[in-house]
Amino acid sequence: MIVRRAVPSDAAALAELGARTFFDTFAAQNSAEDMEAYLARTYGEAQQRREIGDPAIATLVVDDGGALVAFAQLRGSDSEYGDVELARLYVDRGQHGRGIAQMLMGAAIDAARELGGATLWLGVWEHNARAIRFYEKCGFRDVGSQPFLLGSDLQTDRVMTFVIPER
Image (cartoon, rainbow, N blue to C red; front, side, top):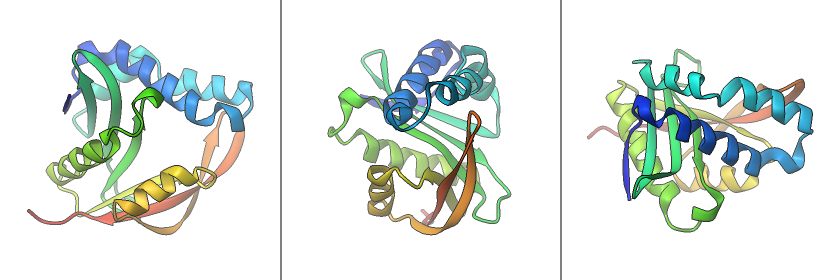
């Protein structure tokens, strides 16, 4: 199992993994219409190919013998919260408990440093207690909130930050 940068040929598998992991994580608490609208806008193959090719975005995948089982995406940011955003970090449900999220977070912090970041920040749905606990364990701290639009449902994300240590 390795963490590597996504390449254009990963776009279809990444689109499928992204849509599936997002659906698995949030479908039970959201309407089918809102989920469908968000997934269609966020996880299409063409969208993934554009993001993989964007030099301001680092898309990392966990490759387990040719199958993608997790991914993270970072973006340069000029937010009040930090200069690199951890926009996505998802692990396939069947892979939970194997240490993949921790391995991927370490690679994401390294990628944020490579993007020139000093502070990594993220938004996490206020009702996603499992993710919030994980981020706290990784050293992130809650610094506020921001809106997040899922389809037509305006939700609240907690904003968490992490000071990237120098090497």
